[in-house]
Structures are given as C-alpha cells and as structure tokens.
Image (cartoon, rainbow, N blue to C red; front, side, top):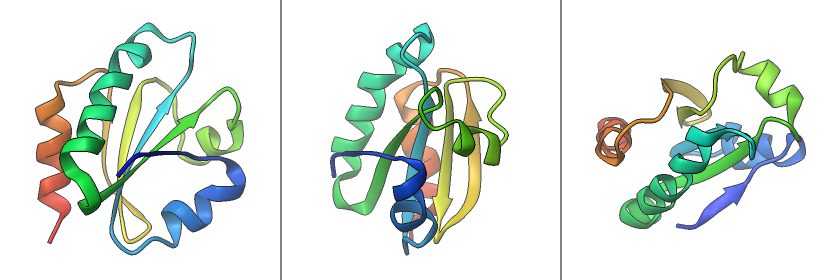
Amino acid sequence: MSEVHLTDESFQSEVKDYKGVVLVDFWAPWCGPCRMLGPIIEDVAKDMGEKVKVGKVNVDEEGSLAQEFQIMSIPAVYIFKDGQVVESMIGLQPKESYIDALNKHLG
C-alpha cells in the first residue's frame, strides 16, 4: 500500500475510523533524521503491502494533529490499531523495528 498524506481533515477517516493497523510518521521537511526515515517508511509500506496503511503527517502543516498526539520530538512514528494508538517510536529506527512492531499488532 502506498503512503497517504494525512491532514487534519483526513485523519479521522483514514486513521481513527480505520479498522486495521496504520503506521503514522510525524515529520517535517527541515528535520534531517525525518528525511533519512522517509525511504525507510516507503520500504516498510512496500514490504507490508495491503496488511497495513502507512500515512505521513507534516507537523509544520498539521499543527493541531501534532498537538493532539503531543509530538515533542520528530521523527515520531505511531502505530494505530482500530483507531487507537498501540505503540509509539521516537527517533530514527532501523526498518526491522517498524516491521516487527507492525507484525506484533497484526492478526
């Protein structure tokens, strides 16, 4: 599944109302580690295929979402299951960490 650009308007339907597992990457274009994480998240989306939805939130453009989830440090990757946060990972992690976390919440 490809990445979804998430906004204040789309977050409810794409993440909170979604039945299944969603990985959300909170990032900003000026953040070096966020830019390094981008290709990793793209690989995760390809590897996980239709099993998970992957979305990105630009915290500069979607400040209310950053506030709602108390994002203090980026990159921040949150995993949602059936609309609820089940795990969060702060900072740059290896690809396997994200895949392991997603697999833990599938099924």
